[in-house]
Amino acid sequence: MFELTDRPIDSTALQARLTAPEAGALTVFEGRVRNHHLGQPVTKLEYEAFDDLARLEGEAIVSEAERIYAGAKVLCVHRTGPLQIGEAAVWIGVASAHRQTGFAACRHVIEELKLRLPVWKKEHHPGGAAEWVNCTAEAAARTGANEMFARQAALPEVGAAGQQKLAAARVLVVGVGGLGCPAALYLAGAGIGHLTLVDGSKVEHSNLHRQILFTTAEVGAPKALAAAARLRLHNPAARITSHEGEFTPQNARALVAGQDVVLDCTDNFTSRFLLHDTCLALGVPLVQAAVHRFEGTLDVFRQGAGGCLHCQWLGRTPGDLDLAGNCAGGPVFGPAVGVLGVMQAAETIKLLLGHEGDAPRQTRLVNLLDGSQLIIERSARPDCPVCSRLDQLKAAKPTTVTDTSLFLNAAGVTALGATAQTIYLTEPGEAAPGGRSAVAALDLARLRELAAAGPLVLTCRYGVRSAALARLLRGEGTTNVFTLTQA
Image 1 (tube, helix red, strand yellow):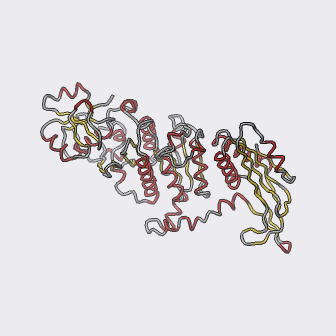
Image 2: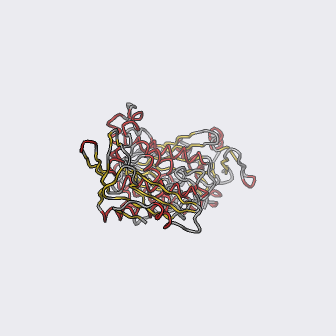
Image 3: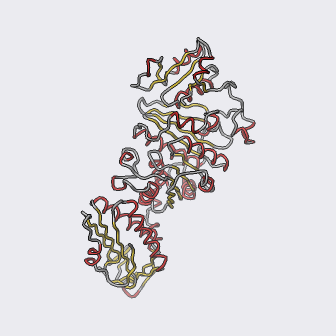
């Protein structure tokens, strides 16, 4: 509950209103009038608010705190009118089962009030001088932005002009999980002016080992809402918008339109293809990553640069790939998503500054277990049913891939004949199931040797690495390498 009052705040009476038998903690914050501000002495204050708007915004802030911090009951009172030195200007009380929830909810309310509540204060100084101060504007300006970004702007590749580009940029992050948390944190820290976060899920205990924007106090909270609040603490000058819902065909174009870069931090192929196709249609660069266990892939997609997602998975539908295996609910090494999320942030910043290099033409595979990286050139396929329709890709140089499908089912493998070899690609510490012939996933020399002896069919646990390595070998001119379908 949020209230405005022109009467002195009675803390005892307000605390009594929060008495609840289920509450093991009562957290109280009082913001009092002090006798100085920004180096000037202050003799008294006057607060003025747009009452209706202030009440609506204040209630929204309190409601957000109660939604983020499950079980918290919040009461906030803000004074208006004249106040003397030492009087309480703001009172916030939180009744909760545990102290951590109370502390966190209390901090959320006071920080959001400073940034969002339409309240002005009139400071009176010795000698009769007075001046009006916009509290929200002052809070946003008091971030030390020049100092915060000074070491980044000192880079010749960034500079003052580049920092201004970042401040003017609009970036959409879809998925605020293991990838989205570090990516959004580094983007906010870099000074991106407007971040929009999209996620329809809630924080769970199983998220906390890798989703670094959340603590146990936020378990049960909407991820997008909780992440936005955390990022505003990190960079109050940034505009952070949260969308508490899934990215769907119904809202895709509206969310992507007007963005400078989009980050795909989702965990399933259905969302990845939808994001990819929407960005391709609207001409918005897409930075996409995916992680399983200790390894991940990173792609930057732009119109007219490299092959698209359909080129990589020609003939496969999102549903087929999700059945084969996606990242949702699978085992994952926390630092792996952290590294890939930070790499997404880096590629986004480079795109905004015009330093993208060859990234839009490459797929990067990163393995945190053995420390390896593999870069695969991503050429546009002339037979791709999607990107081949774009004028700028029609003249793309044909790849060395033959017309034969990269993907084979069991019948297709049989049709290759007795000389075909099926090889299971293993990760470090993994054994091939069922006694299959196996090769270490990154032993390219051995794979080239096997392919020289006859048709080679690659498979792995989820089909992602086998498809990537099959494309790599074909790109080198080895046309008789295939990957086994997982569905």
